[in-house]
Image (cartoon, rainbow, N blue to C red; front, top):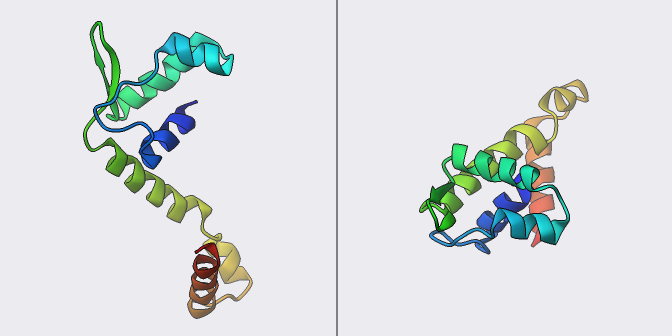
Length: 109
């Protein structure tokens, strides 16, 4: 659930200053326990992406989209790019790896 909400913030579906759906609404829509949704929302509060406004609900904070984008970029680079030690083990040099990444980026567009 946490990752789904991060994705919505990143895409701009949940805009800065916009209210998140209520815990009960999300639990009902996705047929999951409300405590699970509450934990996900609390994680977003702890990360400084949303705030609770007493009596009004939870709202996406200003700068949240950029913060998520920066965090996800770093996560991608450190975790999802080819394993550097494996590349070294296979004798793949930086120019070959760079060329492969450029080709993947070209194909994605």
